[in-house]
Length: 214
Image (cartoon, rainbow, N blue to C red; front, side):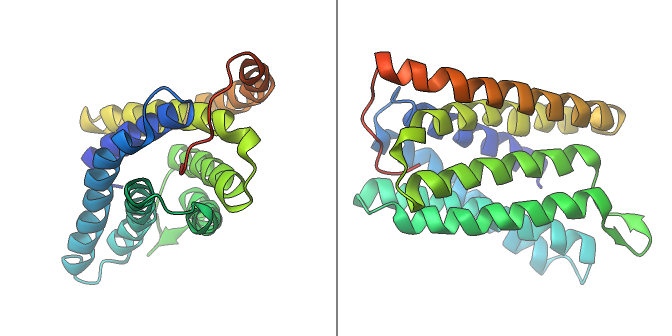
């Protein structure tokens, strides 16, 4: 994933999380979703057209579309007031693809060279979990997990977007990637498991209206 684009994936995940938590008005999140969604469609298109048959580059670019189309879909839903069910089922598709990308990062090799790394394998599992939550929230209409999904999205904006992006931008990723994979795996189990217990209790004391889209 493009290093700079990853930073803004983190930003939009954080913003959409705050929206689901009821901290901002839903439609106010649409500009950033449009901008990042557009970036995540234009960038992979350019990378694929200039790849000159490079299988690793094409494979890496393909995953960007999953994000781009999701954020554009969110923006259109918010601006047009569309029913979120179709976005929810698309999120289910993305969740399955994210599991595949996780596996590719762990095990796939191209011409004998490992394509990904363990840290991004864990990060893709994080994203698979988040998009699965969007599927349950929007596709299946389980509004009770709205705030939990928002909390997960907001946290993932930092730990799967901003933090890895800065490590990559400062050329520290290779040095810390395996450590980050272990820390992230433990963090996800502890924090997201704990939030699942805490957030329903918060909902009982400070209810928020269900948003139109994730």
